[in-house]
Structures are given as C-alpha cells and as structure tokens.
Amino acid sequence: MSKVSTIQIQVGLDDNKVPETIEWSATDNKEDRMIKAKAMMISFWDSAEKAALRIDLWTKDMMVDEMADFFFQTMMTMADTYARATQYKDQAEEMRTFAKDFYKKFQEKQEAEGK
Image (cartoon, rainbow, N blue to C red; front, top):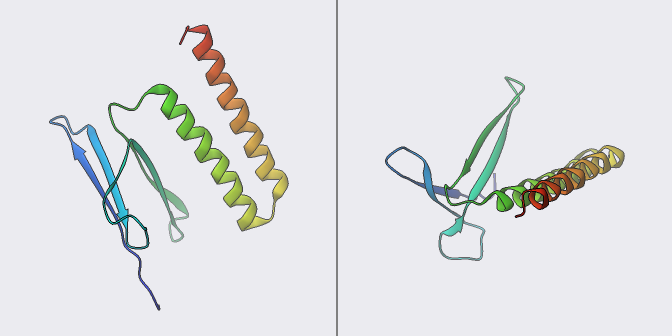
C-alpha cells in the first residue's frame, strides 16, 4: 500500500441522541477544515457476509425538499457508478429513469400540499 487517506466524520448529538451537526474532513480534500453537512449515507460491502453495511444520518434541521434533492442526486450518482463499474448502461439508465420519476412524484406532492 503506497498511500493511506483518512476520512473523519464528527456527529454532534442532542440529549436524545438525534444528530444536530454533521461535519467531515478527508486527508485528500483541499479544504483544511471540517466541512458541514446536513445528511450522510455511507455504505460498505462486507464480502464475507455478502451484505451492505450502512450508516444513514441526517440532522434534525434537514428539510423535506433537501432530503428529496439528496436522494435524487444520490440515486443519479449511484447509476453513474454502476455504469462505470459494470458497463451495464441499460440498467444504469433504468436507475436514472427511476430517480427522475421519484423526484417528479415528490414535486407533485409538494405542489398538491401547496409548498
């Protein structure tokens, strides 16, 4: 192993252990400080157990529209990653179509609720 990169995540919790703040930094990041975030999704693949291990957190001040944007962008990025990793561009496009439909339905719900 020629180089090691470290990612640090700090989660500030309230008295009920609900995230109030999320901050992260990485040794390869150009920023020389902790970067604030309102949500995070981290997945690890455990090949021995053949299972995805996840950490999904969001702060209590994250708005519903921000969560919809976060999920839409995450799904689109997952489709891009899947296409690069597998070359199965047809399935990646299906994921993108689902993400666009998901986001459109969210927008329709918001309009119906007058938001």
